[in-house]
Length: 184
Image (cartoon, rainbow, N blue to C red; front, side):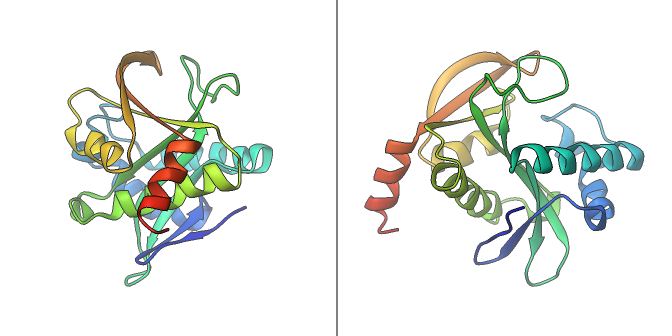
């Protein structure tokens, strides 16, 4: 399982040690507003961590907890996984998705973008992804802003997760050109 590091974060695959920190975030109505529209119980967070640990073993990628280097606390979560149209498991026939969420007290600090860059690098360099998608509720301007900051192009409203979602994409070629232009 892959650990990623940025200037302010360590991205660790979901683990039982992260349950309490993840549940603090997942129990916040504002954090979950555009994701599921409802908060998660601690038991649902436990079940989610178990599912994700299984996906890491099966696929070699899934969800990371964002651990803030300065505090050691869980401040967010993000993923590389296959999108799905319906059901509960990612669909390998669908494109890879990049996604994230942050604790509310860490919003507007650039942490989502910082983590997303590391996750996208992982997807394009380690998984040899040809394209990455990102989806969000059409009203989620903050998440769409991160997608735009990553250089993703708006595809339109598409049906994923049994919902109509704003959909963005970036190809590996576009990602490499973006990185080359930024000197990284």
